[in-house]
Image (cartoon, rainbow, N blue to C red; front, side, top):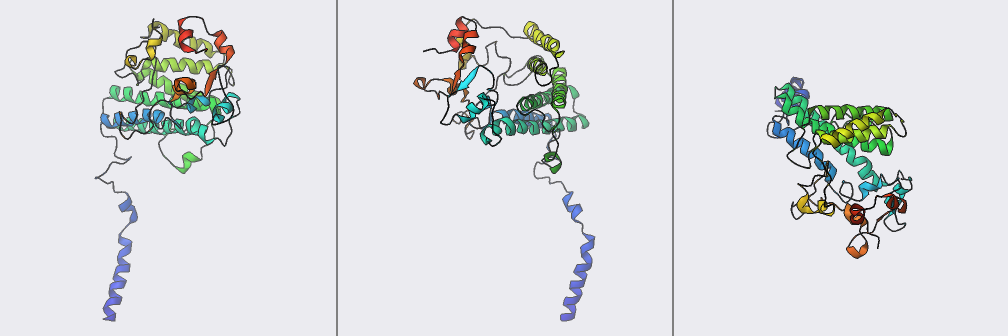
Length: 338
């Protein structure tokens, strides 16, 4: 009996080299969706692009664009200020251009959220390439992917204004290589932004079926702002002022936008899909209308309301900005003075 056991053991050892772990790891599971087999149709690309927008509004209280904290990273101008003490530290740091590296609250909306947008946009762009290689009609693929290019440009524009040069990540891999990328220069980041916006402007349609989606006019408006920002500190590329003017004038003269006569009315929920002033707007959803959505609802408007109106009373308009604002109905409806 002992002799048989020995022979079986030897046979088992001899069989091991005939099986390779590599063969097993190369198998693609057919019962689930993976990054390898996700992009099969245009619907898959649509899902990925929609998920890119989602990164901007998710968890509005802490990191999304619907939260007040999203404003704090750009409070260094002479328009907003805040009160000291309490839970207003994020706003005060931004107002004084002294954002601490240890402020994790601001880094959520200033760093984490934009890079989440970038990684999801990169995944969508990967899908664009795979669908094109599979023979899917190019015009439709590029038009949808152009939204991802725009959103990636938007995210890098947010990052470069806050942090200066940042790592430029152009693939959707959560890898050691991406985590070790060096900081690009400010100019390199802006060149990536312009390249993405150029693709977006070339392939986006001039109209949209949903107000929250971007079109060619939105991309041109953002590029005008990018050019104008490049003309100031730190690049001081003043030749871009003329380019900014060209894009802005095109949007003003040829885009479907105009000032509303009833300024107060454009903020009504009933007008969110019909007012003609918004160039681009994000839509949010609350937990009642979208079960399971959590805090996906805009809180930013609460920060400027006085406590008597149920607001948080976090932010205030600086007097110099108020005094420079043109007199008229828009000023009357924008500011509360007593």
